[in-house]
Image 1 (cartoon, rainbow, N blue to C red):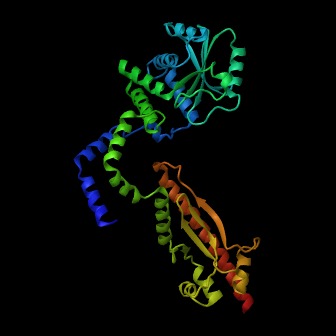
Image 2: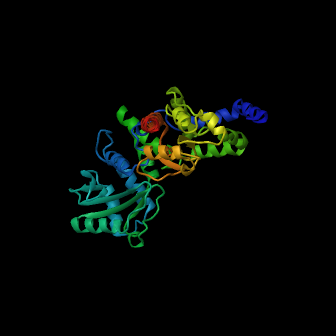
Image 3: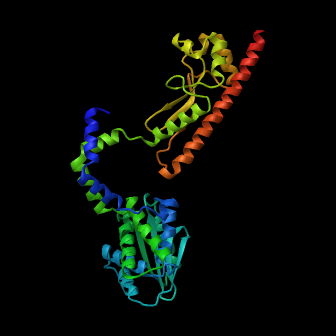
Length: 391
């Protein structure tokens, strides 16, 4: 980091306005979110399970208030000119409702049935992916046939409220957004005082929708834009020096190797317990001296790339140029032709959450240490046999 960069960052850290904006960003999401802890994220199945609980007459004590508000938002958003949707408006005015909610019934995400009032609502939930080919048509035809004596409502729920890809189904399905879900929960919380546990769950879900950008957080977006406009240079310095998940994993692996007496002895080469013996057998030199003379054996290596960490075998010397190396390679890898490089594994952790990194780091290091031991055992065994043949 240059002196100039250091001075810029010091001023940035002490900038009162910047700190106030960062505090506002920090306060825009909850410190504790039960849904983040349980790994809900963008998983459609888990969102559908949560929606089934929110919409039903459950422990939250809000009866059908969240569902009713959501249906009102949906009507306001969609095509409410047909008789089908006029009947939904009438249904919402009915005081006595008795709704059963089914998950994955006939593969449908959410099926809401009110037997007493002869109404069925089909909700297809898409957090990320689009619908499959003729998926909505298949569901609608099935429901139309099975519940022909019921009023039938079809809702296509997505992050942004886009219409179904199937043009023939666009007039059949009301479109809805997760913003409507969030607003429906807020309305219910504002007008009621649910039990504390239910309040935590409801508030956490609204918070999750914002932090996962399933629902836009306009206040947070404005704050971020203000900070970028005024402090772009300072933020760019921080980004340039920020450690990525791959950086952290690589550092963890290298420290683990050092603590297990298998450090790197070049930028990429791991010095295993068999390295010294291997170089001594082939060149009668230490690895360091041999490499200075451009003489190489079979090395275990590790290399960091932008999106993954490569771990495998490599040799900068062709086996055909050295009989001892060729014999050793054949005994260590009896069923394969000589390869300059051979990948054991590529480690990619881009999609992991911060909470899962530590266990992944440990598991990755465990795999690498096990492969090193396996390589050492095979190499030492091969060296003993070759040295025995020589004597």
